[in-house]
Length: 143
Image 1 (cartoon, helix red, strand yellow):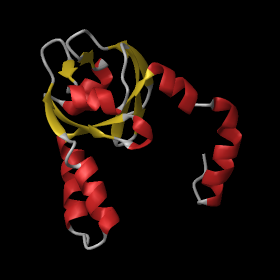
Image 2 (spheres, helix red, strand yellow):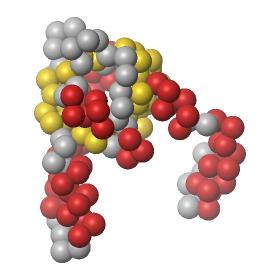
Image 3 (cartoon, one colour):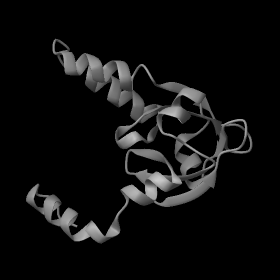
Image 4 (cartoon, one colour):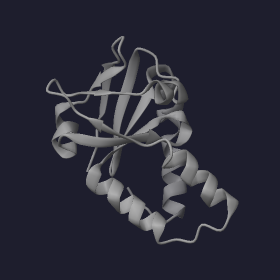
């Protein structure tokens, strides 16, 4: 399970160092794809395989399902983690998430999210935490 929040930088070549605690769970290769809320998602190969199998088992007759598949799976790339713990984020994915030099990586249980730092600060409004907790309670999720 991934958790925690880490600030890092993307170098001029588009490489990002993954935190050591996250690398341990990813091993040598991971999957990088478009995420929700204009961030990127990083999955371990094992977790990605579960998502693919689950998606394949469902009907794909509706247009929304096909559109989602094109965006989520079509944008996915296998990324090798180099000896320094870096991954190369392809230009199209950096553009999708509007990633600048400074980014935030956050662990979200099954995956890692990569955010542009300014976008993360705008999206992670902790003042709204009580309202979010109430919504989660209504869904039956207690914290």
